[in-house]
Image 1: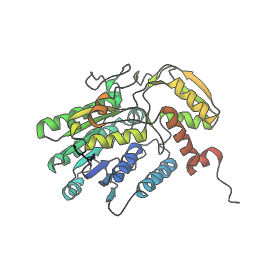
Image 2 (image 1 turned 180 degrees about the vertical axis):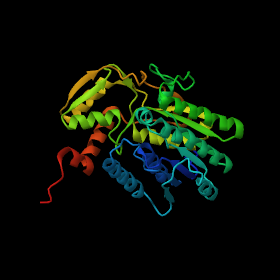
Image 3 (image 1 turned 90 degrees about the horizontal axis):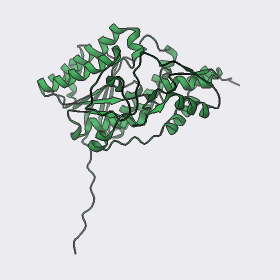
Image 4 (image 1 turned 90 degrees about the vertical axis):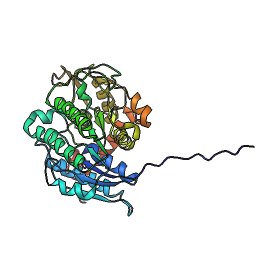
Length: 348
């Protein structure tokens, strides 16, 4: 009688990973995932407000992101945080010392509105900063460079767009992101620096600042103000932050993801009007006002994630309704937002 072999699970090799923008919205969640898996982590982050984010709000959310990371630390995991710009040449000393296995490059101006407000500063971070990180990675023999791009590189698209399809970026943010992809690919061609390119879409969730679609919907609804929808039938592939963070870590550590490009989204297009209605129902108040489509943004739909599912088992588990409920709960437990919405608590 044949004996059954015990099932074995392949463990991910622990790495020394540098996360640029590691105290940012997505970055903080990525760092938590890496720590949970036992990787050694170094964070590079300038804690910038991009010139448009309220300082008190940023301070509050940065504090929460930091304590969320620190609270998951164990004696067996190493974490270092450096407040330094990714374009700073002094980073060479750090790279020479640490000998990073991988770099996850999240440092960027986060969206089109921010780049439009200061294109020169945006270019310094998104172009010069990226080039500096690539040079440091090349010189110090980093094994994998994960570049976080954006679904905006596709331009206008309908549902189920795949990674091989043509890109037609519109606007400075999208153009800089796509130029970054080409630069990363050229470093692989010229120098053999292995890469992974990741394209998220409409990320939302706890620890975000109030400057994205979902966060604006919630804050306006909670204030009893109009929930403004720019284009009733415009769609976004809303993706919960924990899901995309998990996918970024999976892609960075997966052998199959070497020199590949991936969409990391929920893969479900939802109209802005439907999303606004969901927020209104969760909050219990707010009136929706529909305006014309914002011409600064392309028309989009759902992205195909079949490639990521096949190559490293990417599995976004959070439905939009579940994610909105989690975000709503976070807002109600945030001291900053409770004070902004309802005033300071009485000490009595």
